[in-house]
Image 1 (cartoon, one colour):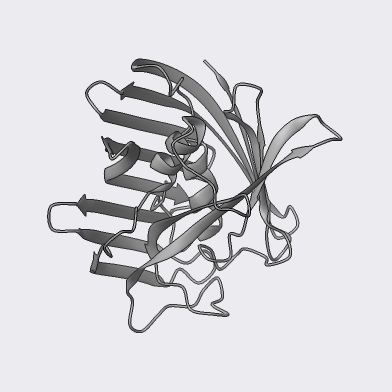
Image 2 (cartoon, one colour):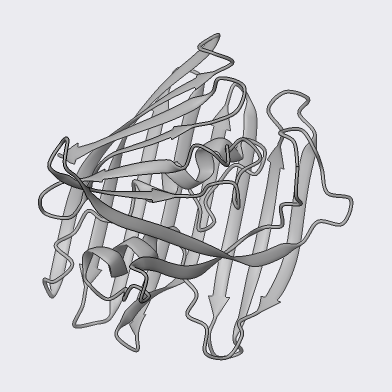
Length: 266
């Protein structure tokens, strides 16, 4: 999982799987180790194909040392994933150093490796994945500059910053940061392959509000920037627990596809 977790081909899972990994620590504490559980339900083609993945999340966060490490491993029938990520505290905000991810569904594999070099202000991005239906291969090997004055996150560091209160919203209340992704062209379909594959920085924006019907904080975000399966009119939705950590993440996608993620303490 990605800001750059897995599945370029199965990108409809990439971001939600990464989202579930981040916020499992009492981020205000100086040193935290924690284990969490997650369950992912995936439906494709109006339920014609269904998958369930169960996994564990191990997290170590040391604010004094300015370091965090996260590892997530999940498995189900015909589906599996692994994500390993570490980062540092810089300028009062968490920032990623390296994230590697692997995802497999019905024999289709996706791998990514993203390395952040702040001394040279560059991001090294490697991705290889297959599209779901036609199994076309997408490969990206690229290096990006980090613009001056821009704070770059991956999904994990972004949510550590959100839960810890280190991610300041804009005047309109929207939380915005920048993450690296495989370049996705406008109107890209689930099996399209870019003849000139590149990586790029894209904005990740969260709109937080209180849902009066359930009495909980929720957030929505546009996944079309990250997945060719996403729908413009159906942003993904996160429901937060009272302690500020995600409880559920849901996303409704094209072709009657959906992802639901549930989180709990081990």
